[in-house]
Image (tube, rainbow, N blue to C red; front, side, top):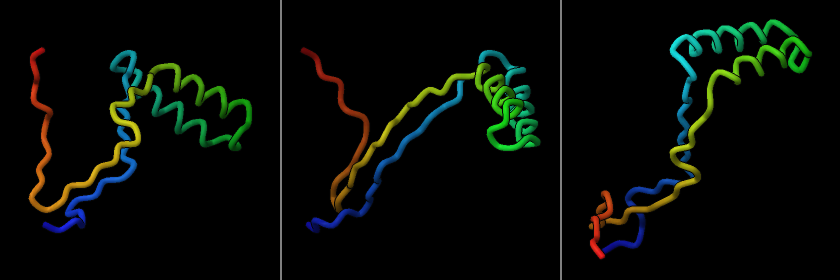
Length: 83
């Protein structure tokens, strides 16, 4: 069998945004868009971005995952083992 990988995944990360309530999703988007009307790091722009960020938290489901699959190999969930 070949040692060359058929599938190669490098440095994959995935984050989900968890909203404090359903309306926060819309409010945060509006605040972030409004902040773009002001110069980059001006006090009003910073305040609007901070206000938007206060309505959610990011959950990192994966962080910097890498793997390779070679011909003839397979991947799947780990089998449960009993002690």
